[in-house]
Image (tube, rainbow, N blue to C red; front, side):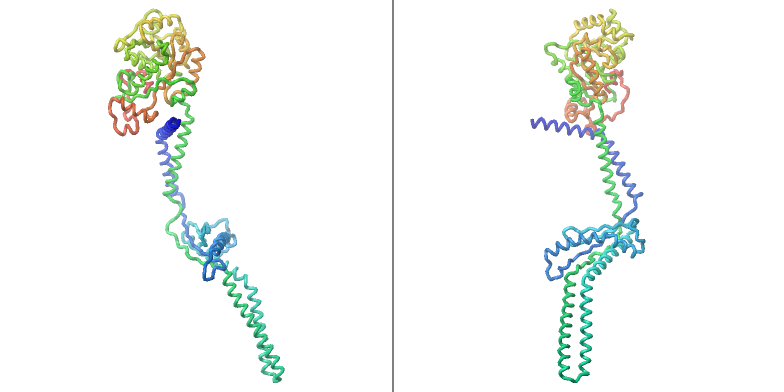
Length: 554
């Protein structure tokens, strides 16, 4: 089971690769257009943008001691994120514009400011983008200095009131001390002098305590004030950061290729043409008895109508021999003696299939009669170079004219002159008698029948044949048309033995096609043909057998 699933996955992958290969020209074209467009827009239409960057470091309060604690780092990181938001505040940006001489209008800034707190650090990066590189550097440095000054001023104001109160008390005490000292110079009373000395000592002790408090306040202020330093000044950038021509070109090329690939898959998904044998089996339940690959042109660049005879070692000829073998085993107890080849519509290769299948059966030793029963658009006489007259329509009135082709195993009955009522003729008793006489003289009778959806003639023919093969052209026959033709045939009692998928492209069936194709190939191909699987020779009018049958295949 696992091996079977692996095979299906491989087939799906090959299908996807084949779709990409088929639309590779579009993928490359879209990638090229996208890349060129992006480069032109980046180089000619987009204005260059320069970026200047400055870096600040934040040392939080409490971190001025001799050792740096882990808690100080975490605190610094949190404070850095807070400061990053403050730097982007409206208040600070308006001050910046005023200092630079711009009107304080934040909606029309000539620059763009980005502030990022570096993760797991105490760093703040201030980036400024502008079309003017000098302006970008000036804005970055000015904004950093404004922020440092603003924070220093705010933190100093936290201790300003207490400092002012202590300094005022000290001033009053010094005034009192001065006055008492002057009084001592004027008083002679010893008792009064002792009182003034005690008062002076008390005031001096109070002044000393206040001075000590003022000193300790300074130490506290120094300890609990955040220190912000600019460790890297912004320099005038020399090269723009936008647009990145190379990156834009690569991204646009990739996006163009992706759009083309998506479009290719959508086109394949919406394409209702038959391209896989599984599609035929899924919509009709018919088994595909033959996969007929499109033949390569010969050395003259021409196609062959009866390739089974002209190039027996080609893989297309081998495909007909496989079809011949499948027909022999499809009904072992009741062999098919009268076989009709039809298709949903014209131009799908039924004539090509009929005549090459007849040739393949004749080569196996069977005596085969090939009848052109398509009285609307007969082609057999053109392919074999016979005159149309003296054919089927004349045989129905007793004038049978059979023609041999090649060896004596293949006999041709052309369509005959045009008739106004093909449906009536094919369903007449005379047609039945003719078929019976042909069965007596041949092992197999193969009829090139009219298309199913082109009229009721093929339905009239159904009562004289043992079974039909329904031909579909790869990439041309619509699935709904094929299903409609099969359903119409079944509703009218026609026995559909199976389907034939004709004109399969060499590159459509994956690696196994090439394996067999080059095994049966008549001449070795160059490596670049093997790689690309394309016909490089120009299509020319076909020589031998250049009728519609050849065109059906080519």
